[in-house]
Image 1 (cartoon, helix red, strand yellow):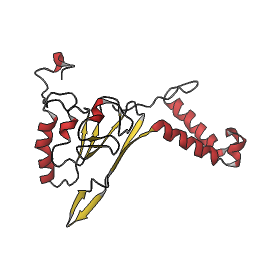
Image 2: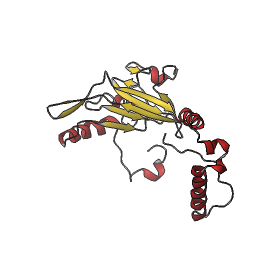
Image 3: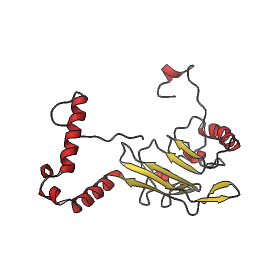
Image 4: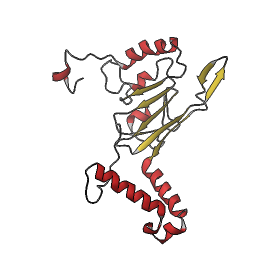
Length: 201
């Protein structure tokens, strides 16, 4: 709100993270939700809580009923055992396991550079699902490293035609034709531009 106050003031109203979660988590539970994942653009800050604080996810993690969190804003990687960033070295934040006050949490960098993955270990008992936090894991995996690994595996498993060059390989020939047709339909000519992965901070 502060960034666009001149346009939004009096027209848009917001609530704090804790206030919103404290209202809606019980409501969701009452309507049948058993596992709740909170998504917050804010990072972590353990200074005195305020509904307007920019990085309130530290306090969001303390709201009862939240099983996992996806956080952002500060363009960092969490979990990261080597991180020296202040917000990941707060009391209750485990930068190795990827938990904030016991809640599995990820922050996946920016521009799609990382993929945040939370694997929730679930227990089912008497018709109810619950999260086993001690067996759940969180990680932020580099997309670049994953792309490099896929490229390396692909090079290792080239067909004989691929090994002689892409032009001789039917799979690459088909892919090339499909790409050219798609570019023509989009009104693009010449060499394809370099791709840039977009992402959410």
